[in-house]
Length: 293
Image (cartoon, rainbow, N blue to C red; front, side, top):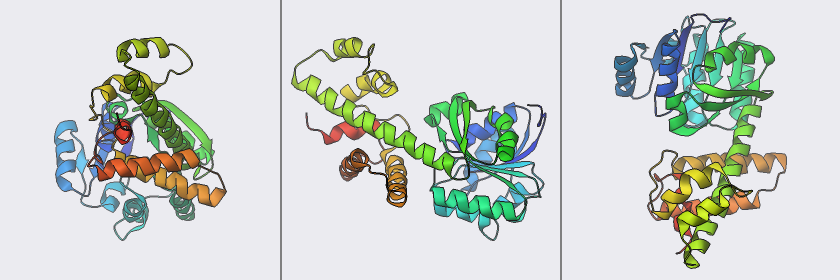
């Protein structure tokens, strides 16, 4: 924390991820001003953590050493950065902008270019770990941008992350997050089929889990979701609606870079069917609902 013993910070977006992340920054001793499109959420955050609430992204960013964002999608991010009341217009030269939203690599590169023209340090820094990871300060962060931007951001992000990796230039953080989601989709597809196969074979599901979770088949999803999938419990944070957004980003990027993603495309179709069944707000392990018992 040498660079920032105490920093003046802004955090844009106080949803299920942004709120606890901003709270950890306060706990680390920083002065934090927040902005959220729904003012009531920002006010609730300030009441809990003692920070300040701004009326616009620009007002939050004015005078800040660093500005963080965790919003919804490309359009939301463009609005809070480049819009008429966006953060970039108010940020001082040399300030840091780090984006934790999962968005397209294209907008990450767009913001890096726009920020460079204003003398800003810009980092695309999507996260993995879900709501629990944000609340417990145990997120994994994959960062794209210059070495200077990463050096400025890393000591601040240590307040809510257990793993922070600089993976490459602007956009590389977002494409690495796509890799993360592609992996999760494939694992959950296999796990869903395996669970249904075990049920069809009249196996004791607890004993099956005990037998296979200690070997090569083991995964975080297996250990944490197999028992709840077996009980048809799907209320664990990261919703299918959000996963489909993320997989859509990966599929779009694959059309740009020439990668082939047949398994991801199939799982995405299955998720669309679970959405049609009313499961859009259930967590990603509800993929198993698509496969008949």
